[in-house]
Amino acid sequence: MKSFFTRYIGALIAISVLGACQSGEIVKDTSNKVEENQSQSSIENDINEPNEIVAIAGLADHYHTGDTIELTAELEEDLEYDHWHWYTLAPNQDPENDDAWEVVPNNETKTFSGTATEDGEQIQARLFDNDHKIVAKSVPQIITIDDHHGSDYVSKRIYEGFFYFDEVGERELSDFAGDWQSVYPYLLNGELDEVMEVKAQNNDKKSKEDFIKQYQIAYETDVNRVVISDDSFTFYYDDGREVSAKYKSEGYEILERDAGNRQVRHVYKKSDDTKDMPTYMIFSDHNINTAPAHHFHLYFGEDRDALLAERTHFPTYYPSKLDGAGIVRDMLAH
Image (cartoon, rainbow, N blue to C red):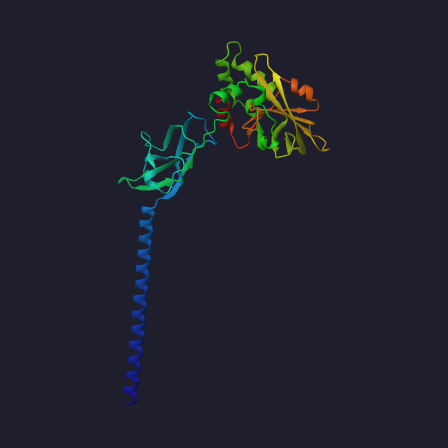
């Protein structure tokens, strides 16, 4: 009897263990199935919503109307495809509305070439597989067009120095606010040679080398960076010094030029006792009334009359965010 009871209990234990093992295997199999389904779902989502793993190289800070736009699509991951299309979206359109994007003809490689025509236009590169399904795309990039002084008759007339006295006005220092870099180093390292070449082509008396020598005098400065706020200047010198002072407007002067046109220079005088900063800062940027500056010539020193009379030395500054190519593009547009 005892032997029978022992065998009975042993059988029950074996059945329980076997059942537990079988149950565990079923749970494990179900888990693997779920993982496989999730993985498949992830793959399908990647196909339906391509990863934005395409970077756009070559985009300028801004363009001028009619400039050539040259861009390159660069993959951040290795893919075996090379079938590209470029798309543009009109200004103020929703980039999430795929129907609003228009394919750009004759641009089916990773390089794009086009013309700047509309400020705020967006552009996107898309990579397709052999079944013409999108496998990667770029984040939409915005094309910024800034013609600075305008393209209408009045703007051109003023830019060339032909204006009426009642068109001139005092300007706040905030018109020049920003972080600016000297173009002198770019002249010295040869990056502005293209600009000098164009000047020579448009001049019967001076060569490219003549212009380089002329602008070595004009641009020379040891102030490599200028930061301007609503009421102050900070100079950054080549030797590492950094000096700030406050300034206030002292109006403007209208100067007559030998060619018969005029120039307006806006004058600011130091309003605190900071040492090692010039008493006067005088701007010329081709604007004659309130408008944000895009570059400027800066005359600074102690003698206001001498600075107003200066014609050959005018350190010139462009936004610090521009590289050499960006500065060249801006200079050639004027």
